Length: 115
Image (cartoon, rainbow, N blue to C red; front, side, top):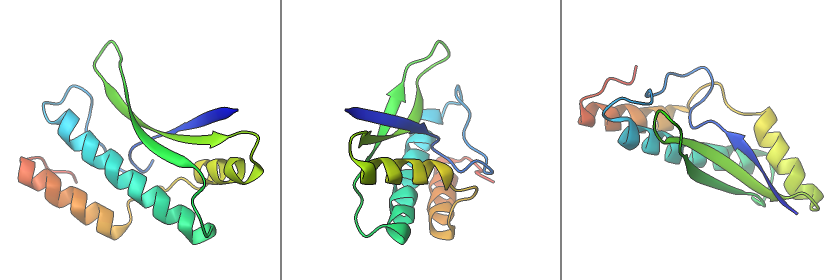
């Protein structure tokens, strides 16, 4: 059966744009895309193939729509379950340098200081 885990769009020790900020939609979308790339790269350090599907999801809320990453997997497939939970257990504390540089430059071009 198809199942999913919900993951953040930024590393847990990094700042992120706050819901309600005028640039939220643009910057959080970039954060989500970069985190998706970073997680896929992380998976490939452990596994030869990515068997799960990482998606960017918009989640409506009373205070506005926020973004989450969902890791979809078949809970009858042991390898997919292993990959999904490995990502959850090894979720990064920090951006890798190239993702941080891309995000910082993107924010700077929008007139927002990321750091």
